[in-house]
Length: 369
Image 1 (cartoon, helix red, strand yellow):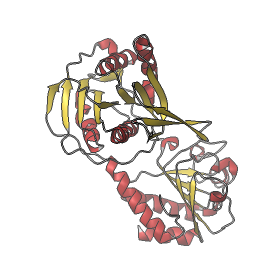
Image 2 (tube, one colour):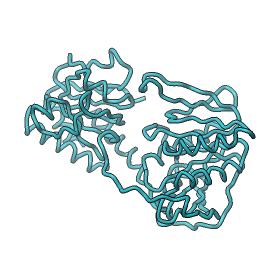
Image 3 (spheres, helix red, strand yellow):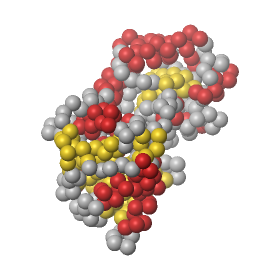
Image 4 (cartoon, helix red, strand yellow):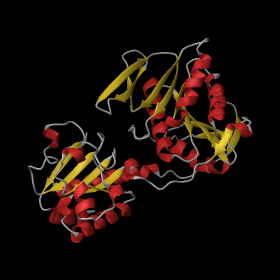
């Protein structure tokens, strides 16, 4: 719904709005009480959270809240994680519209494949029409438990959902990408149980925190066979970045690269975490960035929410690997550059062409932020 941006002032306003929206992800820890409790089955959609993957957990929580709003059901979370991580995960659940959350202590690790199956069996027993949402890693456990239930009832499975909508009847639709995101498959579901894995980069509406959030601990004895060690914390990667400053040959030299660094520092001061991406000419000819930052046919594929393209002409070998969901603020003095005219030939990603010498326009943007 964003109007097309063609000047620096509008770009600055959009970035301020984007940064404010992104700051909602930083949920405070839950400081309320955690009482013993049992799984609440009446009209519930379940979000299953992992101990570490905040981006995936956020996508799952917002998908469940959106589906709950469309169906008039409750949004509840299950936290299967070490006890010391409960406050941060419960805070995330409360900030993203969950009404209740139930915690299971996985001690020092996370649930293994066996542990996931046991937890899913507990959730499935709560209702004949349970809808359970989780991250991509739960696909195997979903398939196994759905197979177990096949003789009793059909449990539908949707892998990698990126969108949820409303049907004419009292049901919902799930959208799944096909052919590398070029098409969407859309399935309608009006009744019954379903397992849904949510794509980590799926975008759903930002919900309001629930005013009367409650947290409970489950009597769910986790066997040592049901857990596995937590993976080491890995640094963020370009392929998973939500904000990218994409540097092209138009920055010319180290002075242009320092301007890009200034922009990066300004965005970081607004609470964003931008990463540098680059074209082949920047990594291999100018040698201003390492090869692992190269986006394109001979580099990495990305799918961020926001790209600030500095001096990018728009060779197909580069723009074909920018993903489809991004808003691209393109700074270039060449109005005939392929990236500046991309909206004329492709619906996604959407490009906002900001014409002018980037050493002037980007500098003006930095001053306005």
